[in-house]
Length: 404
Length: 130
Image (cartoon, rainbow over all chains, first blue to last red):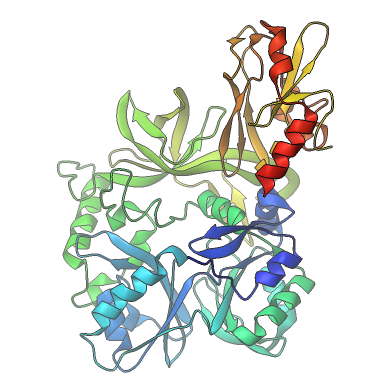
């Protein structure tokens, strides 16, 4: 199969990108600054990411909200114009077809953004479901619209400089707006996949793509590739389909609510009628309630959960490494690497000094919670690790490393 | 400098040079370092470890991956460069110099002569790249 190129392909070459095949797309894994440098720049300044490989579907028509309420776990009917939310395409058994972000920029309809690696599967899945609904129009916007993410403490200043009309999405995360940047209309969500408190994802017409890229760079944005995109999301404990979602190492379905982030995607299910996966998700929610009270008498609906790890010993744990608790098999690492950070000062602002720490996400026994120490088998060497609530936290406009 | 004329090479991008004295010094080539990108972790053996030619003597990890490092010659590890794991950036500029990794007392010094020389390694890199 021929690899596809996004509208920013020539811009990546111009920036000296190292290109790789990712989900059928020729994408920048890193630029000359390197993964570590790009990660650090995003945390202190503003990182620009080409995310045009992700799937973008328009869903419009009188029954668009009703259709989305059935196909997704979120409450699309309650999504106000000028906002967005995290949502999941569930399976009847409570696993995930994919996770996605649903935007409502205008009264006209919705835009659903899905993972590049799942785009064709998602499209078919949704096409199969939409047949039962009248007055719903689905359109693949991938060719029509390009998509960029601008993430980091300086990203809002950059957009403000370029703003010539409309408004930026504000003040809260997940706000969405239609703005004019340097004379070009752009749909902007205050969203992202880096853990940055100041974050934007933008969709623009194909014809405006290169011009807007140049304007963003000219005004201080630094290019970031997929390598740092992965370390940034991992430091922020954000799940990635195929790792923390989908099926596990034994090809078993990972229940949606094994991911803490998924709670946001099912927050309003009581306001919805029937939807795919409802019964299974309700059982998973009930299990979580029991676990909260220390009741682990029935763990069949949610035997393992995704947790964040910090590695205490020297070394790096990677995907697939086995985890032991008290000598017993307790799960495995779903994503792991060494991530860089700026050392924070007492007021939680980044200093000029950098550091690095090995972190991971892991799929472990549901009884294990934050504070528990486990061991990870790295090529036969047992490394001590601690389950933590998070490895990164927001402090004002910064996302800073947690060293608890 | 992509290659060092004094060194001999493995296809897995380790180099070995004669010296100091009767020992041999082992490191990773500039090509390998460039390919790995940002190096975030290096694991080296203890002094005293006995290696056979081709044995794994350490691990080098970038953000994206972990790679084993193989010993081009057999012998006993007599010295380990403890500075490099704390300063992996050294590898980018001094791959054949101060950023050497281990020194061994070779068990069969003639193994050195059977390895790729700089010209052969350079040719090998050209075929790798295309």
